[in-house]
Image (cartoon, rainbow, N blue to C red):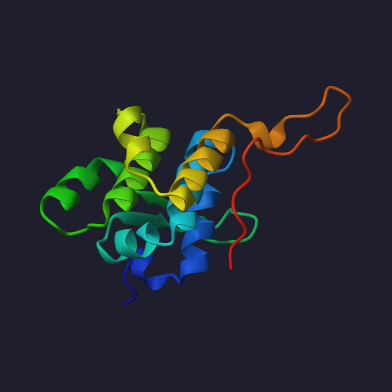
Length: 153
């Protein structure tokens, strides 16, 4: 008998796709997923810790699964050491939780503890959440995001 699909069964690209599939259309939720994915640190750790739930959707156009970070379980996982990271990585996780679920975040603390690359990710996430990637110049031409996501290697 086959068991329920688990997030640990997905490769990194499929996991990111499943998370984005569930977030599409909600810019803040999309930004949270992209922030976690672009950081390179969090998705594998959340996946390994069982903090990402997946569901199959036979009606999906591409037949792929949907996934969601279990945001409410993050504090407990951090407190017990199930997941962890550097100061900057933890700040990006808190920023993602704030974007996705409205969890409060102290902007002074958040920004003070980020290195330049992490700051670029945060700014790109905020720009995405604001919908800047969809803005146009008034004549119908795209102006591009205020802060674009960095190119992946």
